[in-house]
Each structure stands twice: as structure tokens, then as C-alpha cells.
Length: 42
Length: 219
Image (cartoon, rainbow over all chains, first blue to last red):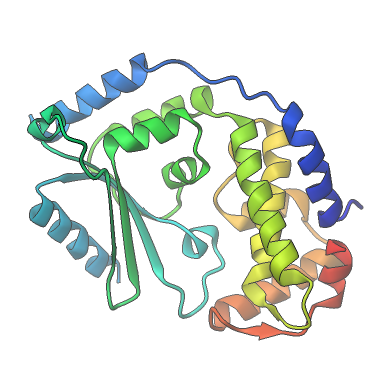
């Protein structure tokens, strides 16, 4: 069984390889913001 | 206590002329290993009226208040919350999945949950949990006396990293779900369960000698 210490070491070395491409842009979030303003305050 | 928390949220809305869109419990109560004297860590997302957003000057986009009855209130203005969501900020994602929800009167939180997987970025979340695990492991576990909660502050983030890597989704908030997935049984699980009983029946500051089986697992 792998120990937690080994997991920590593994992730320390491995994390740089994990994909970190940013997600979609702001369009959906802008729309959500505007819709929430309307929903909350009319 | 829940009624009291809801009263405080209503007070904040009235005092600050805001609407609270979503309010949850975070931290040990949400994770499922609160002690008898744990704080109530209430986290919320709020929105101002339209005019507030039409100002030239920068304005405060968060609010914190600690009340005398162990209620710790901390809120983020919606635009700040959305920017953090876009960056796959782990606390923000945990709030959205908290099992203890005090208030969800608008569709905002549900809309964000429906977009969560699209915006979820494993790397930023693994970094967050890794930092938490390393810090607690190096500073607290390798001592003559160990606070019970520190074992959980190492175990939970490491198991969360495993979840993120193996499943490609944000880790569940509840510690028990992580345990059942990665430590379903065996002597280490038995020891964790015993410690959970001690932690939830005792105080935040309770400590004891290192637990040999867990330290063997950790070393």
C-alpha cells in the first residue's frame, strides 16, 4: 500500500504535468451575472 | 443554531442592502469531522444593487465578521465569486457542493453547479490540496503530541488529490465519501474511525500521543 507521504511526494513531482488549460471565457459568466441581477432585484 | 444563522444572514441583507444568493457551511462541519466546540464557518455569495456596479471607484468585494457565539461569517460579492469560479478556485467549488446549505433562494448556485465540470481545472485543485497536506504534515504530524484534527487535515487533502486524479472531477466535500472510496476497510480505516469518534466527541484543541498505525501509514 502506498503511504500518504509517498502520495505527497508523488503529487509534488506530478502536479506540474497535470493539464491546466483554462476553461471557457467570460460569456457564460457574464450572462449569469446579468441574469442574477435581474432575478435578485427585478 | 441554524435559525440563528439565518437571522444573521437576514440582518446582513438589511444592513448592507444586498441579497444573499447562497449560504453554506464550510470547514470541519461540512467535511464531517467537527468537534463539539467547532466554529460555525458560514460562507455566502451576495449581490449588490445595479448602481453599486456603476461606480468608478473600486469597492470592497468581500465581508467578514466573527460573532461572539462562534459564528464566523465570510461572504464574497458575486462578481468576485464568478472570477474565482473561472479560475477553478477550490474553496469556491467546495462551497457549491457543501452538504449544509443555509440559503439558496436564487438560481445562481444551481447554474454554477451545472457549469462546474466545464470550468473545473484539476491542476489548481491538486495544488491547493497538496499545499494543505504538506503544510499540516510537516508542521504538525511529526511531533511528540499531535492534535487530532491535524491527521484529518493531511488525510482529507491527499485523498482529495487521489479523487481528482482518478475521477477527473472535483473531490467530494464529505470526508466519509473519500474514506469509503479509498480506505473502505482495514486496520488504517479502523484507526481513522476511532480518531473520528474522538474528534467529534472532543474539543478542537484535543491532542494526544502520535497514533502508531497512522504514523506508520504517514511515514
